[in-house]
Amino acid sequence: MSEALRVGIAGLGTVGASVLKILRDKGEMLTRQCGKEIIVTAVSARDAKRDRGVDFSSATWFDDPVALAKSNNIDVFIELIGGDEGPARASVEAALRSGRHVVTANKALLAKHGVSLAKIAEDKGVLLNFEAAVAGGIPVIKALRESLTGNTVSRVYGIMNGTCNYILTRMWDEGISFEDCLADAQRLGYAEADPTFDIEGNDTAHKLAILTSLAFGTQIAADDIYLEGISNISLADIKAADELGYRIKLLGVALKTESGIEQRVHPTMVPVESVIAQVHGVTNAVAIETDLLGELLLSGPGAGGAATASAVIGDLADIAKSRPGFQHGPVFGTPAKALAPYKRAKMRAHEGGYFIRLTVHDRAGVFAAIAKRMADNDISLESIVQRQSATDQPEATKTVILVTHETTEAAVKKALEGIVKDGHATDKPQMIRIERAG
Image (cartoon, rainbow, N blue to C red; front, side, top):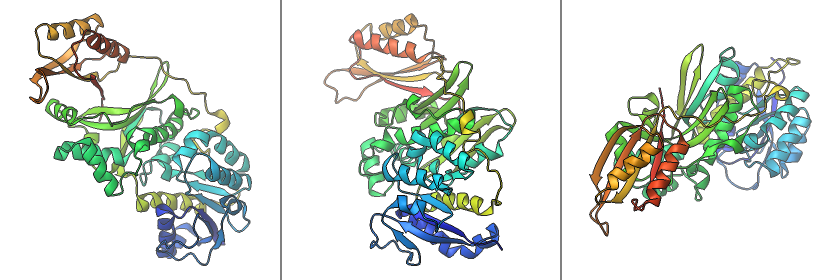
């Protein structure tokens, strides 16, 4: 049997503690599967005295994660600190430059510095593995980087944030408001005290940017993603979608077109009969459309200590199984130096159309004016539904639900601006994209 693989872990929160427990409880199994023993020889965290429910007294303690990353007593550096700068970035760069393999769950770091880190890893001939950075325990990185080699990917989309999916599921299933669902998610530990990063789509955007690079061989472009969260989704939207045969999900979508690549994160209506509409609670799901396989859907736990730690262990096992002197594959499937510049796609018609909810004054001529604004912007309507609004309104209002055929976002926004300018709307119009989904 080969000599042991020596591991240093920086960050001993929920995921780090889970990794230590798995290595302790499944050590013999991992040794058999990997052909060598995996030993944690060094650790680093903010507080050495905190009880983490697992013994790591045999490992050398480092107050400074960068010093740990440079230590000659480790072969692999596991970064679980978090953040796109500071000690996370400094320690990962130090480990790679020192010729250490790196495993990280840090999506923010990769979305901002992934290409530069990949260049260092490839120059040094070491691995930079990050399965845990996207969709928790779902092996979507391995699928794109290895399993789908030879396939041409046309679209990647999915549910990549468990907090948002939990909230939207509860709203649909139990008729609970967004605010009450968010409070429950915070109480149960699914959402942070400050949930902005999750509910406004930033977390999904970081993950999507990484998947886009893997899928299309381009440089990471997290700043070029159209971003819209779920905080403006109301029960009225959930109920209207249900009546029309849709579910509302927060999707990240990356699509290759003739003019470039389109990346967007926003609430989306998907057909109730589609597979992705059946993904509930904190579960994540990523769909990959290719020329050879068609559509591949990967679904499973997207967050939490056990799921994320499982992905970290998988990456660690890959390193343990690698042969000395073996030339490792590119970090993003394409050599970092050969990643194509990101080219943003031109505005185009959205195939799935749009859902529009308007609350308008209940008076003569309003509906005709709405129809005229739509026609003036070449928007064809698939369906129109009118209903009386709640009686607690200070004056009589009506809710108008429109579903458009294929059209551009610019056209829809221009039409809605006109309706507001005409003085017919009593509230801000709601617009949600309808996605073609398998």
